[in-house]
Length: 216
Image 1 (spheres, rainbow, N blue to C red):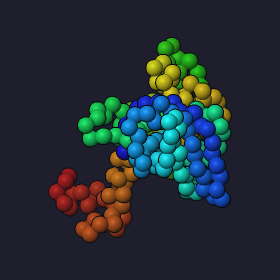
Image 2 (tube, rainbow, N blue to C red; image 1 turned 90 degrees about the horizontal axis):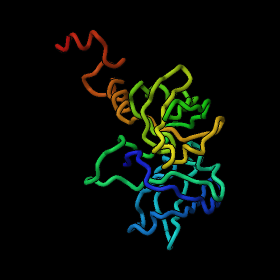
Image 3 (spheres, helix red, strand yellow; image 1 turned 90 degrees about the vertical axis):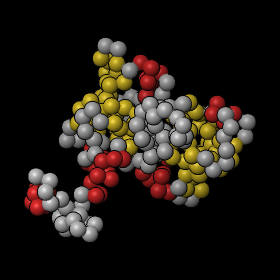
């Protein structure tokens, strides 16, 4: 579990393809901070497991599923990536709860200056847009951001100077792709309302069901 507050920008050393999977090596200052074998690190919002490390780099395996559902497969040597170590129970939750499980790939449709902020408009797949709400949270390449507006085929955010300079968003240009993770709470609520549990109607919760059970 992560917060969406980026701790470091790493540099890709290599992405070695191994059939349908890959091994990703990244140079980062986080390596010197008591990194441990098997711990989780979010790389551009994707939760990966540290398999080995040396004085300045760490390596993680990337599964075929992850390559298919995220932008990690397009990384090249010297590319910069957002990094965040896993949340500890004693940490402040400064962003929002981020699982590191990508819902889809979004594309930068428009980028423009708005006084001290930079606004980004993204196109996004319908299966991800259904969980986005205005003033809700979204993780873009692992960065916790507030949704400003939602349209039928995309959404927008406003990025303050600090977030821009401390993340790879400063490098993103129109037409480029980013990893997208929606707020996980919405997915759980939807699942619970589908009516697959004993006592709930087959079609989910309806106004009639709520009235019958004393909620209206």
